Image 1 (cartoon, helix red, strand yellow):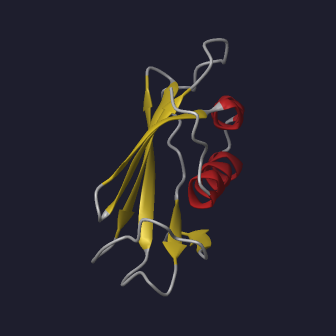
Image 2 (cartoon, one colour):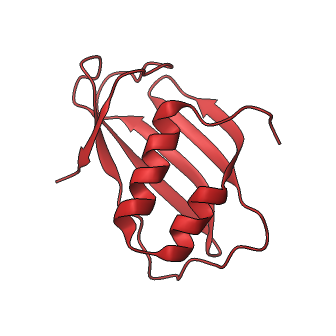
Length: 114
């Protein structure tokens, strides 16, 4: 486990997903999630999550709803996917939709992905 915490983009993405996905177990896991590891690939990130064992599992039919990330430095925006394993948050993938994703993205807007 790392002592590092989520950066503002990661925190905003997780909160947005919890708010828009309509599943209380998912929202509870997001609120209790901790950063396990972050891998930067130049075109995005893999953000691995750790969840305390006492949280309820997310129903297997739940599909996290993910936003589009807008920023002037991004050619065509960026997207994300939240992956679960056995009803528990596993990792958040953040990826550029063309070009590179800066390692630090300070200003951004999250909008519903069409």
